[in-house]
Image (cartoon, rainbow, N blue to C red; front, side, top):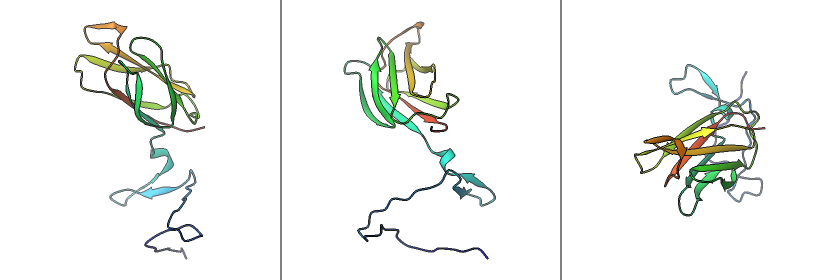
Length: 141
């Protein structure tokens, strides 16, 4: 017989209200329709960043990004706090309010992500983007 635990709140042993919940990489959730289960850890974003490439070249906000490096016009290296397990991860890119620019990623490796901004009229040379971002999905080391 399987067990079921019904609770309203999970708290730490001291009863202070805070909690640290750990999930194994085999943890699953039931799909919206209830027909299948999926791996919870596999579905989580492993890193993301929102950054400004021009002027201040700075991070607006991020997760699992320890630092960035300005590699020249339109080129940013985003260094992971915790490395990826391999370089076969997926990256989704977004660019901000400039309709004439494209942001791409280049040269995945386990410790960093490289973002490159381009003008649409001159795709052969990089240029800073006022605002861009990326999310990373894959396995952490």
